[in-house]
Length: 451
Image 1 (cartoon, rainbow, N blue to C red):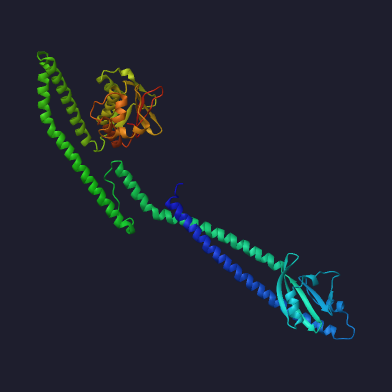
Image 2: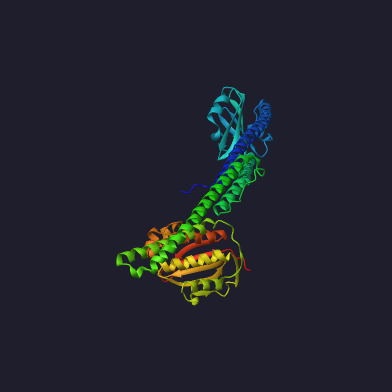
């Protein structure tokens, strides 16, 4: 299972934290409010019950009192119900109130001992308070105060507090999203700079003044890029110097090999074979040195200018003995492209040479465009490139399985690496795909900048 991203975790953390805090505050507020309202209700109802007890006691003090008449004289309102127990006989203003059956035994026992009391119960699934007041040795007054209005108020309060907690959690999530965005913005800048460096733009740097808290990171990052740039420059100079120094002795070797080749008819078979092998290897060595020199300077910015790309593609095909009709130009391709002519010419030349050497020959060179930019495609009719090798094939000195499967293993191993370097210098992409009908299709996409 994929782990959530940092921004998601920060947002969730803020939301959960806000929910826990708001839920705790809501619960505490509910409990405090409930206790306060119930206590207030108990005190006010208790005073009313004591007043009613005084009225009942006075009403029962006469000769032959009418218990029901005494109860009817009480002002109990809509929420309270009164019950008089005298000599074990219950009296109520209603015919069958059922109050006697719902009196808590513990409260009855307390009143029988001569002590007043109150107890919270549920009668017929409704919350209520039952008050008991002793009026004599065998007489007691009980009143039930129903709390349905207070219960509705508490339920409304619980709903409001729940919604407030949910709203607070949502606000916490928004705050977490905003905070994570603010916190991660410098990291996004670092990621963008790292991407630019990976794309070959070594001038990318971070400004330590932008985020003072990340000044140390910015300074370390810039120092790393400086060291990387210096290292790459040293490597480039080394490759260029070595390649340059090799050209002079190679020229001498090439001249000597040419003399041997011209006189190969005078040699015996074994000596003639050795001379031919020497000439071929010297030519291959020259190609390698030339490619190394080109590779050493391929990290320089592209020198773009208006270029007739269709004419350039036909010229590359003719220079390799291929018909110009091999080039297929889409109607919307555009006549002139803003590209580095030398680099694009080498891209086309290397792709065509690769198709001729390893892909059974080039069958089409397409010039067009798509929503991503200008498109160059070179199709061949070889066995194609396996998916496992489609990224590695553009690395330096890589031939291996792909080249072996597609033909021979001759060549310098730098042709497709140069293609990738030149395309990257334009800010484009190159990939190898399967050609419909068999073979490989090398696809180059360059940013669209029509002349």
